[in-house]
Length: 72
Image (cartoon, rainbow, N blue to C red; front, side, top):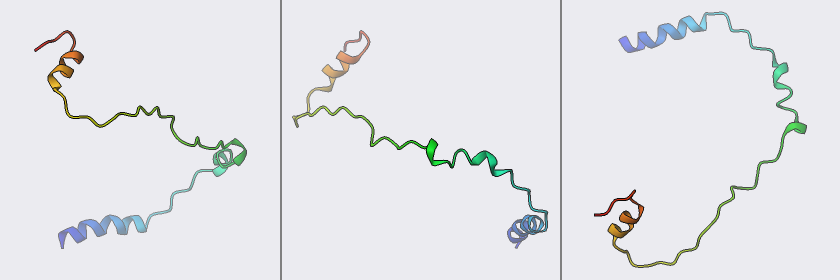
């Protein structure tokens, strides 16, 4: 019951308040003009490198090759 009162009081007060005046829509006219709209690109440019399926290799060699001067 307390939750209902806590939720109902702000809603009732907001319902009795004066509505807020909306801003002037003249600034939106330019963005709605279709002459300024450009078509979206068809998709991202992606470079695909085909790779064959292979057996897993030793990760230690790969980690050593990518580590900054480290070796295990």
